[in-house]
Image (cartoon, rainbow, N blue to C red):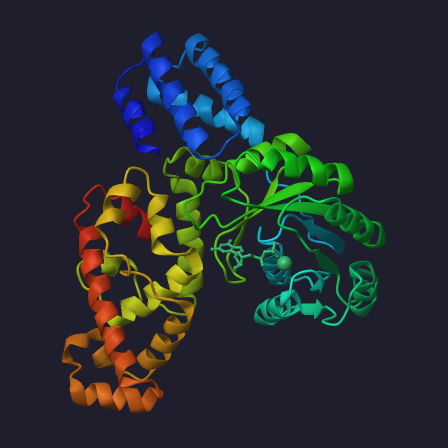
Amino acid sequence: LGSSLRGSLDKLQGKSRLSEEDVEEIVKEIQRSLLSADVDVSLVMDLSSSIKERATEEEPPGGTSARDHVLKIVYEELVDLIGESTDIPLEPQTIMLAGLQGSGKTTTAAKMAWWFSKKGLRPAVIQTDTFRPGAYDQAKQMCERAEVDFYGDPEGEDPVQIARDGLEATDDADVHIVDTAGRHALEDSLIDEIEEIEGVVQPDLSLLVLDAAIGQGAKEQAREFDDSVGIGGVVITKLDGTAKGGGALTAVNETDSSISFLGTGETVQDIERFEPNGFISRLLGMGDLKQLSERVERAMAETQEGDDDWDPEDIMKGSFTLKDMQKQMEAMNNMGPLDQVLDMIPGLGGGLKDQLPDDAMDVTQDRMRSFDVIMDSMTDEELENPRIIGAARVERISKGSGQDEELVRELLQQHKMMERTLKQFQGMGDGDMQRMMKK
Ligand code: GDP
Ligand code: MG
């Protein structure tokens, strides 16, 4: 996916004018990309005909290559369809989440609460799912992790009553996020229930939560939920997987709304505001440097706070110490998994990624915390030159940090693997990584 589109676009490099065949080929590749990203067939047809028309009729402005011109047209048409991110004012409000079971509502509720809390508001999650066993515990745990207020009733049987009680109980909060139950399929009982909750809660905004992997089913769901509670925005979850989330376009189109948030993982921090350019790049399998550099910038800014003696560029110069690794892990924690980051670098994602060992950068949050503690027990000398750490030092570090020796060795192993991986970046040569790290 995407590589063939990139291929046909690359063929246009240097051309200043498109032939009819060029346009045909590009449009066909765009259709292929969009269809495999689960975009609705009729939407794809509409899109491709307007892209074709514009690419044929519009002259590339002076100095612009045919390739850039087509890309611009494709972007504009898709942005036009997808629109800007749903407006989420940073003020007191009530938001209700709707969607089928497993779409990611409960996870999203906690994530959004975390997001609002980072914006300085006081959010509370109200869990009204009495249908799914364990729903209460799951929501409660996630809210604890997000450090936000939570209301639920593990014994409750009436979701409407829980919603009512929940609003009262969380009166101190300013943003109320109401999580609802789902079912495996759209049923009258689900729709009735959510309509009733809506009546009590009177949300300012109802968001439809969709799994990125949803395909043609998006249309019916969007229609049903929009008819019953009025959908003002869409959340796409599980974008950390392989699915591109094209079903969201259908939902946005069907509900005449927009995309609000993206879910990119299972922890409460794995949430992003929707941003059209990045999403479209991903949909088409094209890299997006804008989003990447912003994320890198943000991550680096957070990482480097109060740490003047660490320069990310050192990594590109050949030395990669444990100290770098510690900083790198923090940065990655802020940016998201490395393979996602790689996906966003134009012309690089696929190839290099395939060469990486699967677990090269797969450091889970828990392990990262342990690693952090372990590294705190190392001397500066050890951090700068991990090669000197032999068995005796491993034992001392293990005792000092209260972590298993095994874990200390694992950390050293991980460091070696990352060092090797970064060597590959250093060999890239086209400066992408250097630019990215410098930002
Ligand atoms: P609900 O039934 O709609 O409330 O869905 P849940 O919030 O319980 O999510 C269902 C499953 O999807 C859970 O295992 C979540 O951890 C997982 N999940 C939700 N959002 C994401 C996401 O953005 N990425 C990944 N990888 N998993 C997610
Ligand atoms: Mg749930």
